[in-house]
Amino acid sequence: MPHVILKMIEGRSEEQKRALAEALTQAVTASLGCGEDLVSVAIEDVKDEEWMARVFVPDIQQRSDTIYRMPGYGPED
Image 1 (spheres, one colour):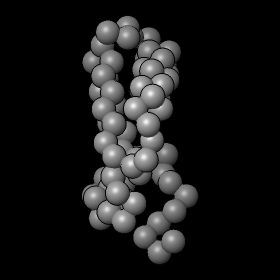
Image 2 (tube, helix red, strand yellow):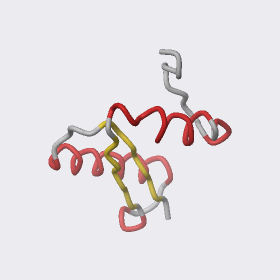
Image 3 (cartoon, one colour):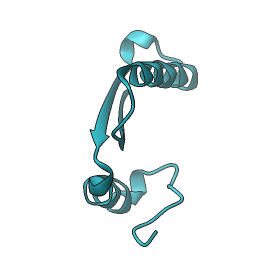
Image 4 (cartoon, rainbow, N blue to C red):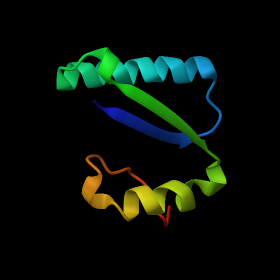
């Protein structure tokens, strides 16, 4: 039962978020071979000025062992 949590800078429309959730669901079902009914997707909006403190440090930098694709930016960018 995959649950995807996507955090992104605020500003996308509800239509964009629904389309993204659908695309993520399709990617998960295709990659893992599970049914759509088992997949859930959450989208969390984050203010740009809060990104480093609320997402980068706790979710990426401090949990690097869980990251399968690192971003191309860092705290000094």
